[in-house]
Image (cartoon, rainbow, N blue to C red; front, side):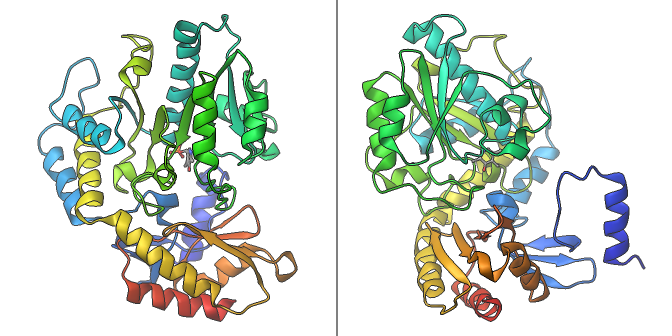
Length: 399
Ligand SMILES: *Cc1c(COP(=O)(O)O)cnc(C)c1O
């Protein structure tokens, strides 16, 4: 028999060391639970960074995958397929947008949004060639392409990867006055995560998104919401911007749970006026919009609606936050969150969040630290209240 440590040692030998996983080797998952190769069971409180809002191997999504695998899996966009249209129709309907451009991973959808915004700036707004600027926030996380890391404020993400892409400005997250001050006649767009996930579940001040929306409209700047992590019911609404009245973006970027945890699917959505700056040959992806992806994503969206996962997230999230705030511990600095998207910030004197995550592994709970001091809790949204109680007992014991 191969032990977990043998599997880990072998994996480390043949895989690039671009991650530092917790020492557990998983081989099965169902709903909110995963099992390691020794048969030990864990509650998944990370959900593949919110790729598994519908839970592991949701039967309806697996059914869509298998059905479609028996029909047609790949066409490329050289031809039409019968699954992409219905999928994008459902997605646009849920988002209140006219059109979507399907891609595969989150970073591709972000790149797509950047290209559309720049094209829009030159062709519609009238910005001089190669002068377009996009404003982003400190501690943003929008993916890992060379262009996207160019506007990261995290030094490690950029170190040794230059020359970087110009054309970006960084403002403090949640600072509407700084946004307004940063806008020039060359500004194409402001791109923001409604809640910063990788930065540690950072929630902006009340009303910030609506104010940013207003400022963008006033200055003819596109407002882009990166909802790859916060979207698709994670924070208690279908999209996180919907918590604020009047914050609807011009462009919406989705991914992660769009693929129901089984297949990478992402998309960039916009009005027809904006999306039509892209014409045949301007942009593309070999796998984007393939029928297997479309069938899976269409069903993944249907599950979110049918099972009212946004309502579940909102109700259970309130319960979880309430119970967490009731834990008396001098190791906890702050608890913050919206829906089942929660961060526990550990006091620096009490150690790193990673140490607490490691202790939770022993107790059968999987989650991950982000930015050293924050433990993220983002279980699949199909979780039951009794399972949250089970989690809370374990959190109480480590804190
Ligand atoms: C995960 C994430 C991305 C990148 O998605 P990938 O699929 O890893 O490329 C971009 N933006 C946000 C907000 C994310 O959480």
